[in-house]
Image (cartoon, rainbow over all chains, first blue to last red; front, side, top):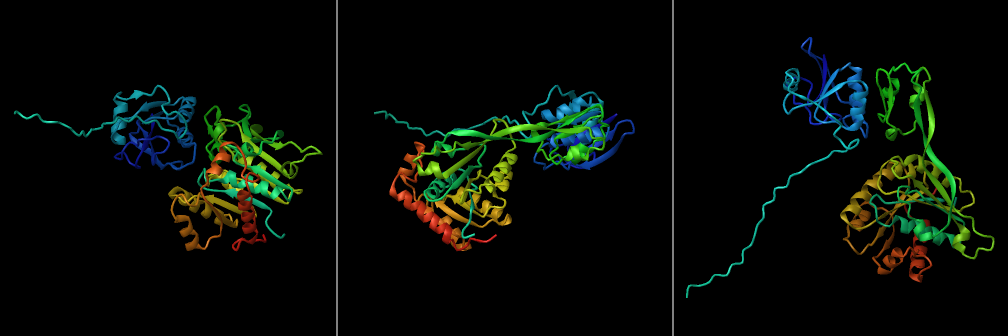
Length: 143
Length: 302
């Protein structure tokens, strides 16, 4: 089985990228031969638009059957689904760790596209404010 | 040619007074000459708020988008490989077209080795034109000023083909002595398309950090496009002296300073032009036009 991953570098020890369409490298791993088939830099990393589409296209062109991605916008998702490619949500860690997790059945299959549109992310912040109060006490003397 | 004929009004930063300058300069000139004003800010055309002209449909504008005949397509992938905008994906048994990314360049259909791609017109919006004045029209503005407006349909992301059509109309105004183009803000594709081949461009700015920053980007752009430019400093007494310093240090041509004036805001908020309202504004635009004609840094001849 050929597995496609978004990566920060071109080797198995590199970090799994936090973005599919805008990652630095793609790695195609052959789990039967247990070796990297190809690793190539993402030419659409800084594209004005359609980075996810081109990333998905490159998966198809490399006969990838399973993609591991952090999350995915609707365009890339539709391309991969149109080509019957399975998409799994990756974990924080190296490329090798993600491959191992997939083969051990520990990754979950992505149910749907998660971006809201091309090139648009969705953030969820959690504020942790700490207030500084100024007291205005009035002491009462004990006579 | 004694003085420039096609004049752009641009800014870099939005909200600096492009529309005010473009509309009032056009009205000022229309007191003497036949003039055409074109609103190229097609995402939010505002000029007619101050002109109040009734408009008629002039032409539809759109672009050609590809359609794939899956029966003759061999799914070779060449179209997707060549597309500069990643608007196509070729799957083993189908071609996906992402229409909103397509710029209508036509390369895919040109390149397809089996001619499986045909192009079809997709409407982006329309250009409207001011109604012709009546034969007994008394208003000199209506008699002399022809106004065109481009309006992009809501949801369309690509303004450039619309700007392109408006430019063609601008260069076709043979009856007019002067043509004023109210350009979109910013410095991206629509502005580049709007600026190309203009005789001169007036950059309207304001003395604020953002005004200066965006002006410098706009200047970089007009220099690359080799369009002679000069600057109007609007609300000149509101911020600091950064625009004056910039002009002095670089020997730029400062056409006009427009001080902050509550009367301008009053007229603006009621959709009234400055020209014709009070004498001081007539004088302001008389001065502007004099400086445009006398401008030391204009390259008059193309």
